[in-house]
Image (cartoon, rainbow, N blue to C red):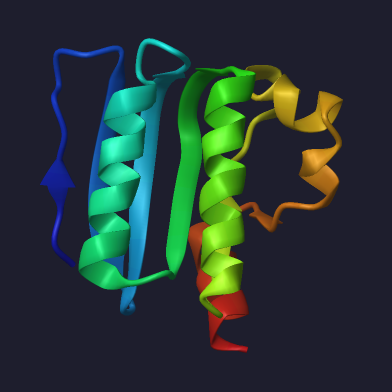
Amino acid sequence: MVTVPDRADSALTLTSAVTDGVPVVRVSGILDATTRDQFTDRLADVADEHGPDLVLDLAGVTFMDSRALGLIVHHWQRTMAEQGHFALVGVNYSNSKVMWVTGLAQRLPLYDTLDEALAAFAS
């Protein structure tokens, strides 16, 4: 597993690792207009380096707006178009209400744990 931390001084901290051959991005902090570019850049870098498979661990998210959700949906669609696997882990309703309000919580691949997401990738 290789870990690549992001800027620790920002409202958003992103950590990338490869677990069982699958890139995992751990997100901590605020996902909104102020952190969108940072989030976009990291997801693009991970996709360029590792291909379409992606797990986003959102357990550390304290707030998510609709723009951030739109970016997540974009990466989900991109992954599906490239025949990859995509998963969201640790999504907390109180910090990510926009996912339920839009109905996307019923469509996106949500898992409680990283182990569950990785098992889904293997099947």
